[in-house]
Length: 343
Length: 134
Image 1 (cartoon, chains in turn purple, cyan):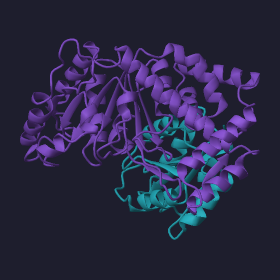
Image 2 (cartoon, one colour):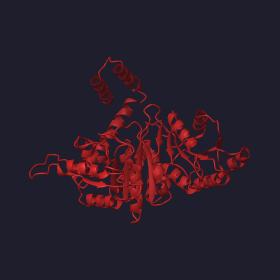
Image 3 (cartoon, chains in turn red, cyan):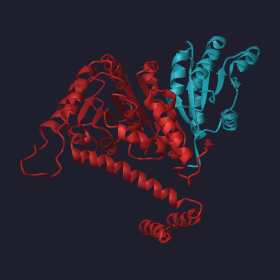
Image 4 (tube, one colour):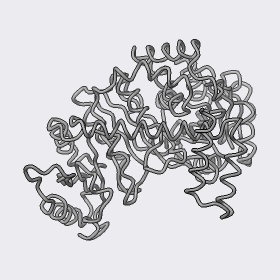
């Protein structure tokens, strides 16, 4: 494995030194020091105590940026669309940060982060900040630390934060909890109307974009999606607060030329102004839940792998691997182990 | 966490369009467990330095076959130092005459990997020479 030692052992969390250095990095990032911001994002990715100390300072200052999730299948044009959005948004003077997530190898842990290739023309702009993240084994389309990284960029003062997921299939819907507005990209001729009414990714879309609008079939694909997603979706009825499907607007873009991108930005603004997602307490609670439960999971895993428990935990995992124990019983046994040592 | 993946930027400064070597190396380092950020062709020193900063990489690997290495590589090293990234390991590969290597090393390039270098050699060098950070 290509790993370097870090100066932060897992046991000692927020010592006074760590807190002070975290606060330093946080104030650097708030003051516009881009290297401090970059280092802070590394700490967040590596889940170090330093990051926790810094987030304690930064989190109360986040919540002002518009967080936009961009998701869709591999090769549908997510990175190219992000680059086109940056170009368009920068004309209005607003600052943009990007988190571009690519998959980590399940075999070596390595990753090839190639989303920047499409965005590099904006690298030198001081009001654009692009960060690539490897998913590091997390399966929902993002890394487990993407939400925290977005909060850091938000606190650092970026107006718009674009979160580009790994290339997704049908059910990597996590980005919807991390973003205020979720854009799902489709390429022309990727499926028929039945694909459009399957549950999953398309259900979390606030906006559906058919990219590669210059290809044959783009308008027909957009028409099918419109018919199935917007027109056919049930309208909310009074006195009924059951969860309702969204009725996403369907747009067509050609990210390589910028065609349709101003309309997409206008639609993003409309969605934000309508307060359709993040402004509602339920959506904010859902985001908090997603973040906190992910951290709870990480913390429990860390505790089960600390020096005292590692051997026992690994024995339980081996028992499951060899079918001597079922996964549910294994989970109960590990939780019981934590309970026993807590008392 | 007790350890972390090493982050490497693979960049092609200058105007040559030959990126097969850079892509093979990026792929090879991925397989060695590195997180590799690839930025594509025709990068100016400013673009390389900006990417290195935003990505907070441990290593900047520069592939160049155009002959402009004596101009571009020292410039990139200087920019990295100016922006406070004094602990980043800079390496180079491509077509670089042996006679130029001492001057490049003086400018801040830690190693030059010529044609025929194996991925394992590069990976071992990076693992051995990257500076610990937190």
